[in-house]
Image 1 (cartoon, rainbow, N blue to C red):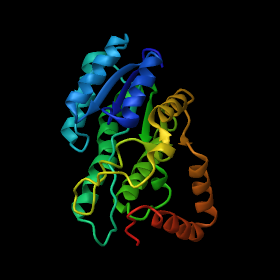
Image 2 (image 1 turned 45 degrees about the horizontal axis):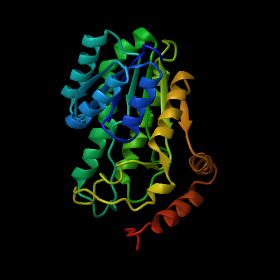
Image 3 (image 1 turned 60 degrees about the vertical axis):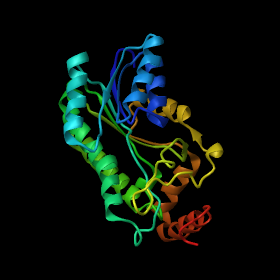
Image 4 (image 1 turned 135 degrees about the vertical axis):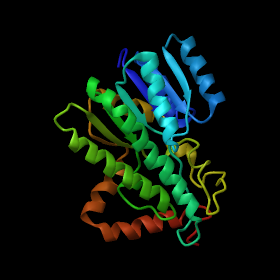
Length: 268
């Protein structure tokens, strides 16, 4: 990764922040992108203090113009793009018959369209470097999760888009990685949207038992270096993907029962 120019969206916290630290430690040049300007600048200063080359760009990936601006800023500053990590994302927790449609629209704008916009503008430069496009997805992109219709829909869409992109560029040297962490201790659930679009607040899951963001970052960085195509990180995730192929209707019931056990589950 030494001297590779890496763009990371959603870089102000969680997996995105951990990726910036991990990849900077491997010698990469980091372009940080997120809406939270103050947090971005703090990370930029920390990485600069450690000797990394880094630039922060305030961008809302749900806005096409911001994504275009992000890519243009990276090219203007560093002249190339080697890796684009589409990490920015939001979640939700509400049954479909109760959710405001604007919630699902918002998830699609950030999780799916944010990936499409950034990839569209970065693609010409990534083809020049035979670089990597990374989508930070979820098991929700393989199996529909109850109470997360918008989240699963956006991740299924992201994975379909990236898989097609890989096939279209099969002979052009473009590397496309779809990566699916397990439940990760980050603020994505705390910032998840409720049925009316308000923030969910406290996570219904035990954060202490989850993967740590820095652990996820190491696995993603390794997968980029090895140019892997799909990375499902946990044994639970791998079992869900496998069993869903073999026994989809059994998995429907299993997933339902598992999510019904959550504190304040909407199924109760």
